[in-house]
Amino acid sequence: MLVSDLELIQAQSWIRAKYNVTDISHEFWESGYYGTCVLIPSTLPILDVFRVHYEDTAMQRDGLFIDLAFNDKTVRICCTHLESLVANPPKRPSQLATAAKFMHQADASILGGDLNAIESFDKTLHSDNNLKDAYLETGGIEDAESGMTWGQMAATRERNKFGLSRMDKLMFCGALEVEHFDTFGIDVVIEDEDVGRRMMAEDGLEKPWVTDHLGVRGDFRLVTSPTPVKL
Image (cartoon, rainbow, N blue to C red; front, top):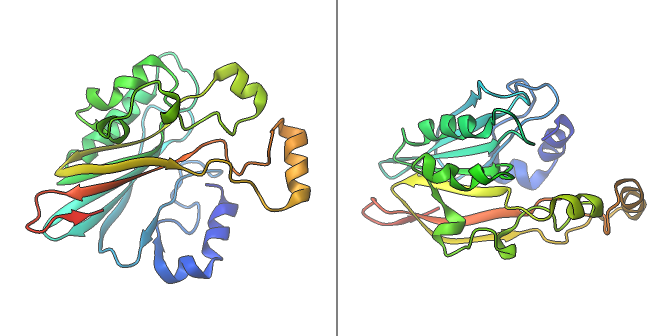
């Protein structure tokens, strides 16, 4: 998110009516320029919200954690944006390991976000940290085009250079089962035609897509409750 995104979010009456927002300013972002933010349905009981700033980062990345109460269990949600690009030594393994440490401290945890999984070691970061990958757990095949979340709506030159990749993931641990996983947002374009034409000309886009990523979503079930709770 940028600060302008936070302002746009807060300006929406339907968001103000139905959601709590973790961040209304950039005060707790390590970077003064961009950061993460989560919308939490106002019907959910929030126990805690905290950030963990990754020690090994050149891009001011962190994990944003929300603890929610379900029956007598704490379900911890983590939104994160791992380090982009290739680094030597790599930074993403250390970052996900830090997030996983906090995930394993709760009864059940789900992590989601742009994990920038662009190198071979990224394929095993979930198992390296005793986490499960929702896409794989629901029958997804690694390297299958159907699982890719980046590139379909990227600039043509970038797609030709880097190809498609599964950058965006949902990982989980603890007393959870994943029942469904899919992607969404393909081919969504901005509505302002003038801005759209400018984007296509300046960025080399085939269409004025709102993002170069697909979203990921999953249905999870808390399995240790007397009555199963769907998340």
